[in-house]
Length: 256
Image (cartoon, rainbow, N blue to C red; front, side, top):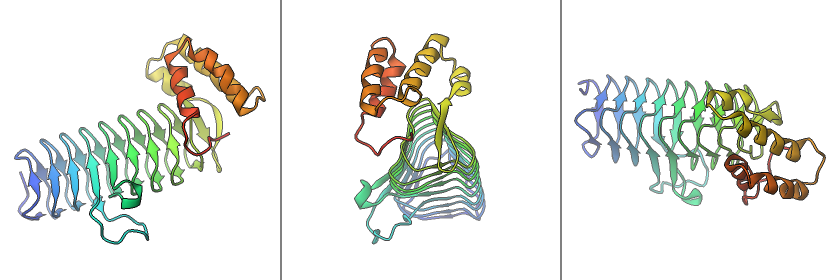
């Protein structure tokens, strides 16, 4: 199932069910799990570990060295989980020593064409990256988050679960869970209502999240005062508790 025109380093460890198309290059210290499909003209450099059931399309560059001037040849990693779709011309770089040494992609993510995921990014599960979305280094993207086409995320930002960054948004601060942001620079415009309903969130849960959003963004409260109000809502709602936990994490400041 490996095309004879592919170039495979002898140190690469490939499951017997892996498919590799013509003219793809698999470098040293690469591991690829069962039933993963690698299209033609893909370059995968190591150390990189790729799980099971992934599909990586043509002209993608996976696991190459980070685009960081602090990198001086140290052995760092890229880890990719299971069931991911990585479309054409995507670039995903390995980590840096300064950032923990690993770039990590979880499971069942949909990464569309021309996406860039830089060094030391940590991507959860079931995320969506539309065409040309780009992450600078050290970005965290939590489960079920969505980045619209041409969305740009600055380094060290965190994107919360079920949040939505609209087309061409420029994200320079953390995006709380369940929140929709848009613009340059990105600003909050409400909760991700369509995304929550598509994910079958109950209407009472959505109402609680709307109330938490209003306390944070619409009531004119100081941040500390809004946190105290949201704590009361969180006693009745797990989702609001997730929202609250994100707000009090020691990350960068949130988009407001």
